[in-house]
Image 1 (cartoon, rainbow, N blue to C red):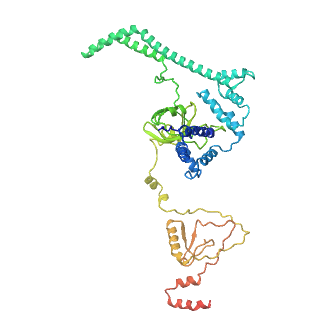
Image 2 (image 1 turned 30 degrees about the horizontal axis):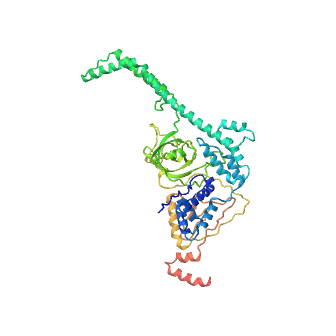
Length: 510
């Protein structure tokens, strides 16, 4: 019995600009998969299709409202293809094609394939190779290749010619770089050997001194004379200085050394990653090589939000994103990390840097000195007893000028009796405000200026509220004190039976 060949799931979390073309390519591979496994039963082909598409595509199909059990494979195929290939603006696709530049350390073949994917919806039905060749020359960033392409005649200007020259130039640059790196490593080793031979004369003296010192240390004596000690120190110092001069070790620090303190190390998915602190960035970014070198590579999810650089109208190209925990020393924080194609600098955003203690916000304030005259609460209460009496208090002996328009006819506010159910509460509140010093009891009859106060139980005393808001340009006149209504008289004389009988007799006759 033949063993079924596996089918890789669709890679949903890569560049969203090429999602439609990659989906079409995956469908073509699935047709080959069906042929290679000799599948003929439609139900089996549908089951293999649903299980091979991957979790991300399966979730997308369910979110589209497709009944995967009842729909046929062809119907599911058409719905997903329509979703992954929405109707696009040809002008916008051409602009994206023109803005596509080669990333740093991106291979020539990868850049060419990316251009071909972007050109699928540009309408280049004729002259596609010429458009690809022109855009490749513009965006490859290789000056020798650019000069070579410009020098070609119209008959010689072909896409294959330019690609072959670019691949040859890329290969030569890589070989030269490897040779240069090997030469620098060999030169460093030879320089170290030269330093060791240069001070071999001193080394012999030092070995004799060290042997002599070791024998005497066992006997508990120290017999190094001044000349021997000077020779030993001179040898050690010269070797140290020469080794520092021929090596590029970042652990050797000097007082005048300049180094980028924004570079920090933090643990990401079990690997130590070097980050550049970017306090102006809202997100954390790592490049594709760093993602591939992680010990535990997380699954990338599609980035639904576009992120833009300062004053840029083009969003970053993202391979995907993932949620993780970033650790540094004893601190850790949960954060989202975006993965970008090519080799770029890893950026640590402001929020993550702040959570890890790498960035702090200092608020300018006056620190309390040793000779501060700060007083405690008890000392302040003792020093200002009128302000800490527990009462709000009134402002006394202060004359206030009221701007009154004399031409306005004086008016008197009508009496507004307080409901019986609220009178006890109102009276308690008035007494409370008297105790706290907010209002005062007025003695000796009413005054020309009277607040709109309740009558009835409070008719014996007229209260003037200090904080009563009066209308501007309105004169209040109250020459006659407010009279009690019949209901109020009846309530006030409930204990007197004779008066109550008179009131009861008066009531029906108005």
